Image (cartoon, rainbow, N blue to C red; front, side, top):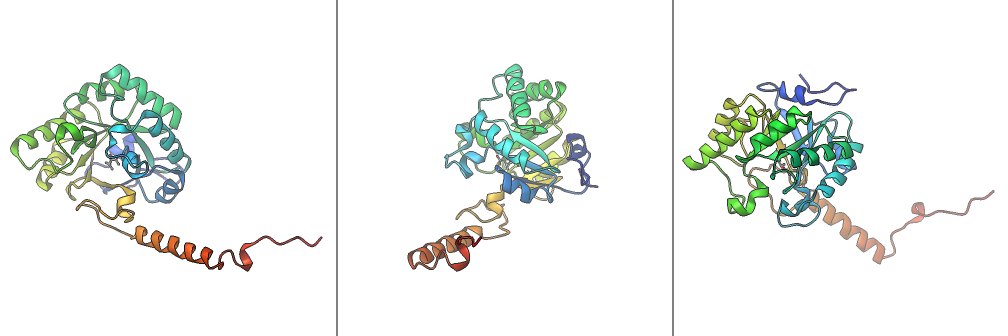
Length: 273
Ligand code: KIV
C-alpha cells in the first residue's frame, strides 16, 4: 500500500499506517529540481538541516537557522506534489520549551506549506512533541546519533554499542512515540538496537545507518548520488555524480579555451524577415 495516490499528497496518518508494511522510501531535498526528481519515487522528502553542511559548507548542523529551513522548505514544496514533506526544526528553535517550539513549528508550516516537522529527540523532547501534535503539528522524532547534539555527544559516532547508550536510545524512542510522533528517524545505531526500538514503538521507524530492521530508510540524497569524496559506511552510492560533474566541468573549460564552445548550433542568428 502506498502512502499516497497519484493525485494526493501523502499524509502523516498514511505514513504512520505503514508500520510493519511496505518499507517507507525517504530521501532529503533542499531545492526544487531535486524535489521534482525525488517526488515520484519517495513517500517522504525531508528538508534536513544537513543542508547546512551539504549546501552551505558548515562544519555541523548547529549553525542552521529557521530562515534557512523555511527558504529550502518552500523550494522543496514547489517541486513536489505527492510525497509528504517534513522540515527539520533547526538547533535552538524548539529545545527551550513547548510554546516556543509551537511558534517556530507553526511558522515553518505556514511559510513553507509542509506537512510535518522533525525534531531531534533527547529526554527533553516528549513534552514538546505532545504539545505540537495536540495542536495540529505532525512530528517526526529523531533518536540515536543526534547531529545537533554533536558537541554534547562528543562527535557523531554510532550509538547503542554500550548498555548505557542502548538504554538512552530506547528511552528517547519510547518517549517520542508515546508523545505522539507519527514516525521516528533512528540514526547510526547498532542493528539489534534498531530492531529492538522498531519492535518497541507503535510508529514506523526510518533508519539511516540503522539496518534493514527499520520500517523504512532515509539517506542524504547528495551522499547516495556520490557527490562527496567521503561518505559514511552505511551509505550505498547509486551514482558517481561527483566524477561526472568534474569531467563535465573540465570538458567545458577545455572547449571554451579552445573556442569549441559555443558552436554553430548554440548561437542566435539574425532573423530574415
Ligand atoms: O538532516 C538530515 O538530513 C537528517 C537525516 C535523517 C537524513 O536528519
